[in-house]
Length: 398
Ligand code: NAD
Ligand code: MG
Image (tube, rainbow, N blue to C red; front, side, top):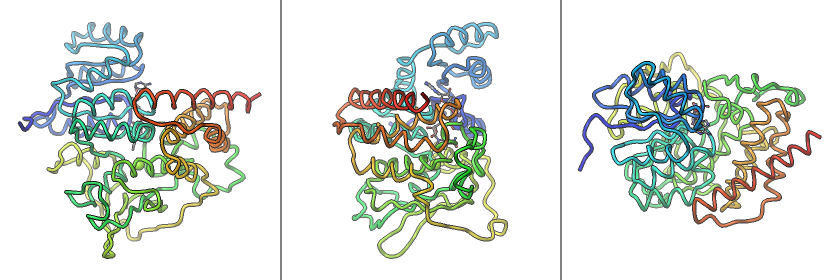
């Protein structure tokens, strides 16, 4: 039975950058979308303000203490939203029988359990949380397939690829005449910074992305280009394309959001302003189209498009991600976990920007091969790599 309007949406990570863009788009279409649940990590005040504005049935704080604060704040303003707390509550709202769609926009590995819960429950999933797919690729894709969930990519590159593939694309490149994927990358804030200056760049400099306004973790990932590495792995799982058919193309303007090459020589792409409301609106309404708040591109203002090869020496994280994808099984989970530890430590001022790839490489070298059959296997690979990264980083500091 087709779902009726308004569609009920769960936003995991509602207080973040993607959460804000999602709320902006759905607020423009109150007849189509209703907020069913909003979730956040610790910032109860911010989530309370969003509850007052969007009146969800549930609001979940991952942190139990913050959930108590949220309960009190909502009571003070007589907001009818029910406040819940803890990791299990995140999974419950993500798989709630009355929810139609789940925007997965928690940052990092913390987003995996609720996103997987949505997949197991057969939801329409709007996937921004790339780390969940990177770490759990085979487990996550099997859950989607077995339950009949619909997975729609929000990452701008993957959304562009999705739009440039045939509508009936089944993951079989040959059948659809697909030769490969060109994944565009802005190159981040340090694309042309002299190499010797990279040792002393600050977290604020790393987070000052030239084209996109995003959370701090993904901004650092863009500066190291680990973000593109994670996206290569993400593209592999979403579209069934092997690593050797996914090429990274540096395109600092971020106008072309990625391209698909076909065997007949055709190259299809999606172009637009670097504004996440476009892929969010595309995925929300798919296969229909709705206004996102983003104006069309003015090609006369763009005038010229610029592309260059990625520099794998300046950005070793990119090569590490390809290596993890080729190694398979638990290697991408280890890559992702080590990266999360390294980035957090960099943001805390405890390791240098240039130490990030070395730390990840050392964790990967010491990680034994492991099979991924279940969520438990993924979480074990994640935890082992995290422990190792903390230890190695501690040694680097002492
Ligand atoms: P952000 O830091 O702005 O927001 C993260 C959200 O996750 C917040 O709501 C926060 O409360 C929540 N959160 C953080 N830690 C949590 C935890 N331990 N448990 C539960 N909730 C937690 O991040 P963002 O920029 O919105 O990115 C979110 C995801 O989307 C990331 O995976 C990122 O890679 C991806 N993404 C973002 C953009 C972008 O433009 N911002 C583009 C493409 C993909
Ligand atoms: Mg992206």
